[in-house]
Image (tube, rainbow, N blue to C red; front, side, top):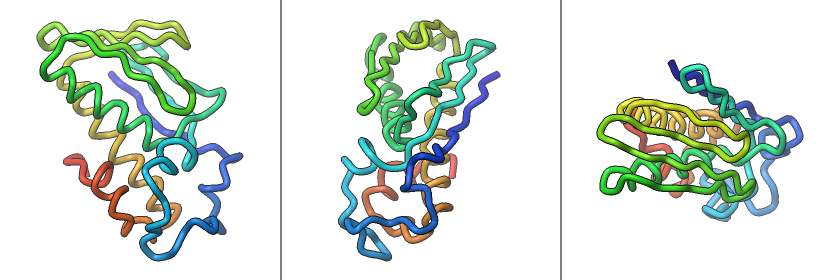
Length: 160
């Protein structure tokens, strides 16, 4: 079983109802770029337990979009190669994936853990992370549903 959730950080002002910043121009917020979403805004702690192995990150938080797109990239690359290591843009946490048929080994450096999951489970986790990132952001700020970059990258998940 895989338990997954983003836990928005109270110390990140981008979750606050009175946000946006001066970069924003409602309703579509075209001033917000992929870098804003991946490196700065909407940070959360990660709750991720894969078949009893806790891979959660709770110290510094990381942008939910960055984690979702990191999983998407790893999953895409594993379609044609057997190994990939990806790094969270803000926290530099490394997630190494190794695929052997339908078996996936996920290794993290911090916390130092190794977990096993199946290829379908990884694909489902990726879709879930993208959908949850989009849901959390657009629940906090419904106007961001109209942000083209956000909608096209994480909002187009088949899990939605």
